[in-house]
Image (cartoon, rainbow, N blue to C red; front, side, top):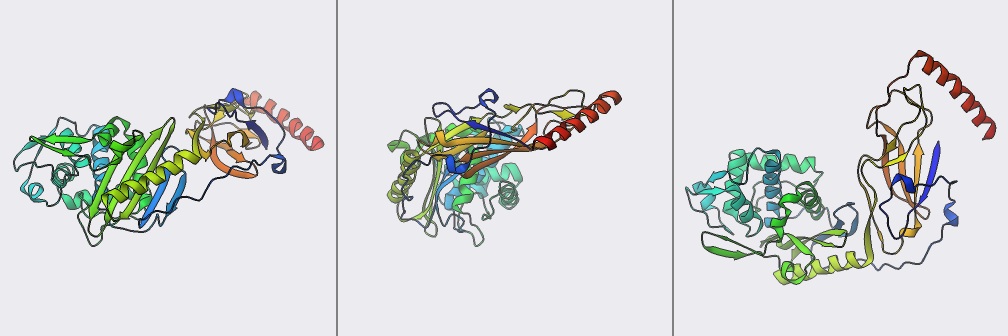
Length: 399
């Protein structure tokens, strides 16, 4: 098994293959362990919360994050996500006109104030869902996309399962109370991660402070949009059963955090408790982009192929969230499968990439072939068999 160790530069951690240095394995006991002090995460006046890095998915703080709770209007994050998905697929367009039904118009709670029989653009309804939490807009889009609230809820649950939201079940697109309507802080963070990363072209909507429709201007209820310039979304929620909830995201430099706070006792409390989480994350952690997708990390020998070496690397961006000022402790180790043989196809797993901090493995990714390797001709394969025999023989004597 081939082993490569790499020291990451503490100044720049966008590591490319050229930065890899072949060295012997590092004894974990020889790695210095600086005393970087990180306090315990803050305790919040809320039923449940979580703080997640949007790029790496690393959870930096949590409390009862898998507890099933009524999500109130946080539900509309899934409604908006499905609208954005259909826009991305091209099955609907922003200027498509949606007919407003009496059912949508009659829906109680917060409203965008559409009228029965109105023809309203998808773009306006999406703004109404996200910015002013319009229940009427949410029902109108559910009817437009799925023919009704019940089939739309079925779609919501199918996509929740696809995204790994294991503690969510939706009965409607609005978040109005339902006997079996629930979600969790972790699930809402996962959903937000997909909203941010999957459809960035629509994300600017979540930062808008107000929306006007039919001559009625309504403010965004996320107070942090006014208080913290790094906060650019996402959604508030409230019912008497759920309490005051807030999903927020903020970006400072190259780090984006997602916070979910559920079950506080006031609008001010959900803003303050969210700010505590975000401040903790930005102060004590940093996000490092270690490898780009498709970066060539090694060119090992391949036997019996039409070429002698194959480029291998990662098929996804490798991002890590680390305690601040500890990047110089990182080491990368490539564990390549022994005796790679043709044929190989792009994407075939050929080993693993391990990221070490001191004596701990803090990340692991697949290593894959980045190019196809076809089988060589008869004489090429025969010659490689001979070479491989002597290579293994020499290796046995030197081990």
